[in-house]
Length: 588
Image (cartoon, rainbow, N blue to C red):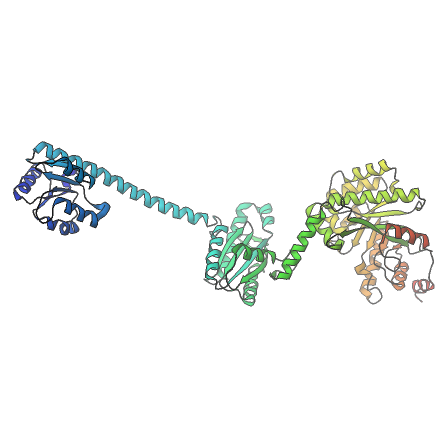
C-alpha cells in the first residue's frame, strides 16, 4: 500500500481548517481522507474505521485534544493510531504534555503546505515501516510457534515407529498420575530383535519394529497408549490398574508373537516378555515403570509376570548378593569344601571335588546355585575362579607335604565358561602348576556342557592344550544342558559325570536306569570313564557299579567337607565291598 492510500482523519473544531487540510491532501493525491469538527465523534468513528494517521487540534470545545488522546489510548492501547497535533501556537508545557502522551509531531497554523505534507509523509512512512515490522514479527512468531510445536511433537515421537518415545510416555504418565484414577503399565521386552539386526540389518529390523507395533496397537482400545521406551522395549499405559484386566490384556498382546512375523518374503522370529504393574491412585511415574520392569520375567521362564513386593525384595536381595560378591575372596568369606570321589570297584578314594562355599557376614551361607550365576554374569567369576585354583593348589601342596596324597589322588576344580574362553587360560594354569612344582595328575578340571557349548571353538583350543599336558577334564552334569554328540568326539576330555538327576530315581524309574546305562556305554565307547553324582543309597551304587560306572560321589559316602574334616574322613575311611553290592550287581 502506498502512502497516498493511507487513511487520514482530520479533527478540528474549525471547519475552515478541515477544508484547507482536505484540499491540500487531495491535491497531493491522498485518496482516503476524512474530517470531523466535533471531538466527541472521534472515538465512535475510530471504532468503526481506525485511521492510519490522526491530525488532531488541541484546543477544542467539549473534549480538547488531550481528552481525545486519553480516550483513544484507553480504548485502543497499543493499536492507537499515530497523532500529529494541529495548533496555532505551542508553548513548551503544551509540547511536553503532548509528547508525553505519545504525539508523533506538530503542525502549526497557518499551514505551510510543503512542511505539512512532509511531516505527514514522514509520520506515515515511519508508521508504515512499523506495521511491516510488526507483521513480519507476527509472521515470524507464528512460524516459531509452529516450528516449536513440530519440534516438541518430534521430541515426543519415535521417528521409526511414530509411537510416543520415552519423553512422550513420561508426559502421559505424569498426566495420568495427576488424575489419580487408576493406571496400569505393561512393560514389553522384545526378544530376538538383535538377531534380526545381525542377520538382516537395521533396515529390516526397523520394518519389523514398525510392523509389530502396528499389530499391537490393533489389540489395544483407544484409551490405551502404546509407546517405545527403549530400543527393544515397549510400554503400554492403560486407564485401569485392575490386576486381572492387565493380565488379560498382556496375554492378548502375546498372541501377536505366536507365529513368526511375516515381512515381505521373510518370516522373522520374534518373542516377547511382559512385566505388569498398576496403581489405583496417585503414583510416582518412575516408580510405576520400575515396578513393571522389575516384574519382567527372565528369558526362558513364563512370558508374563505381575509386580509384587516379594518379587522386588527378591530382586533387591539378588542385587545385594551381586554387589557383595566382589572382593568376597579377599575378605576371607569364601572357602573350599571337598567331596570324596570313590571307586565303585574297590571303594578306594580316588580324589575329591573342590566345591566353593560362601559365608557372608550378613546373609549367612549363600548357595553356589545362587551366587555362581551372578558371578558369571558380572565377570567376577574370573577372579573367583583364579582364587579357587590357587586354593586347590595350596591344599595339594600342603597334603603332599604331609604325606596325605597318594599318587593317584587328584582334586577336581569346576571351571566356568568365562574362564575357559580366556585365550591364556590353559597356558596360565600350566604355568602356575609348574611354578608350584605340582605334577599335572594331581589337578583335574570339571566343565559343564552348557559352558562348553557357549563357545565351542575356544573351549576346544584350551582343552586341547590341557589334554596335551595330561590334565584330566570331566564333562559335568552331562545330559542336562545342550547336549550334542558332536562335541563328544571332538573335545579332548577323559570323564563323563552322570548328573544326580539321572541317579536319584534309579530304584523306581526304568527310564533313568536306561539313560544311566546309555551314558556309561557312550562314555566307554569314546575311551572315557564315568563318575556318578548324587548317590545316596547302596542300591543306586550297586546298579551303577553293575553297568560299569567306575567312580561315585554322594551323601552315601560323605557330604562336602571343610578341609580339616575331609582329611579326617580320609584317614578313617576303610575301603570295603558290601554283600548287598555284590548281590545287586549280580542281579540276585
